[in-house]
Image (cartoon, rainbow, N blue to C red; front, side, top):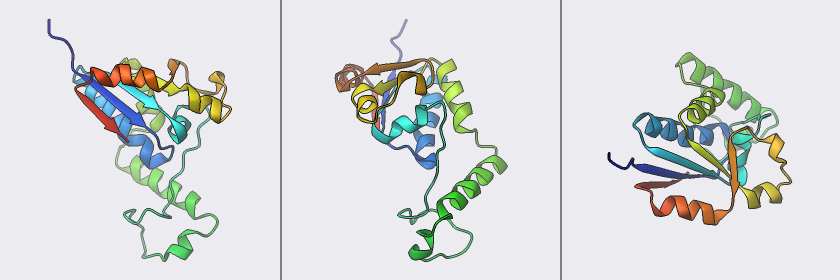
Amino acid sequence: MATPKKLAIIATKGTLDFAYPPLILATTAAALDYEVYIFWTFYGLQVLKKDRNLKISPLGNPAMPMPIDMPVLVQALPGMEGMATVMMKQKMKSKGVASIEDLLEMALESDVKMIACQMTVDLFDFKHEELIDGVEYAGAARFFEVAQGADITLFI
């Protein structure tokens, strides 16, 4: 029997738009029988929180399509992040895009290994019970073990 291909992902961002790529790639690879690991570090840990409130910001994201041309100063006004988040969630729902919750559930059911960076957990004073069940806690050395044998390694 052939050794399964292995995918290793480092996920560092904790916004709604950056939560999707590692989860979509991980669940797709798992469906293709890859052994998949995601090493969540720094702000990426927000995605693993049980009580997550991921947002998207139009500020500093010039590629984000807006319904009207909007100057950067307007994007910085209070409430714009909330509006952009609601707009993006509505757009995703209307297009049938799975939610982050659904993707996390699919990933765990597909045996995607979620590794939370213990240094970052300590840095931000997270408690293990704040993060979803099924998470491994380890340091950067664990990621190197995974990446060393990976066929594909991605930094997101």
